[in-house]
Length: 181
Image (cartoon, rainbow, N blue to C red; front, side):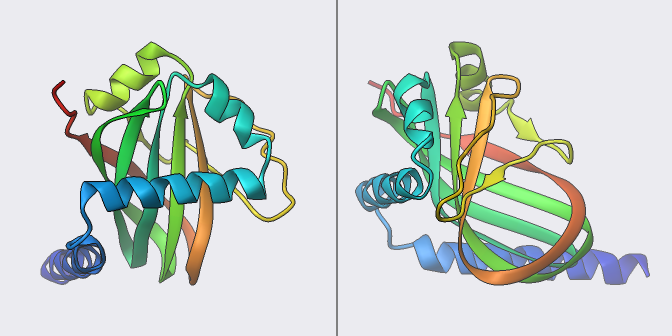
């Protein structure tokens, strides 16, 4: 049984990594920045209240496409761009592992707003991890984004496609590579 679980986890991780890597392998940082801007504008259009987060945030990270899948064990991965004072400070990678009732696959966009310097620095120092208690607001057309910062962080997602049934726990981890000025 233990070997089966380890094999399944390895295969799931490989497939998710392959999907994300293939989709984004030829994408340059400038293309990723353009897609990030498009995603942010789309999300603000879907939920105009996000404009206030954008205007007042210390910084933010945008992941234009996160690919997620799982059967009992799951994972997600995506590449993004981190901004401070509305200027790019570097690329970021999102990785997520989950366990529980889940079946399917989906893609979504994610924007993380940082309310203050402390929250931003936790993220940039790879110390920000979301666990099973963290929640994100899923945006839909016409839905107001009425959410407050939690520990200086507010997370919003927007579905791209796919179908996922899920009641799981897990966490997101981020790896950042700041651009040296």
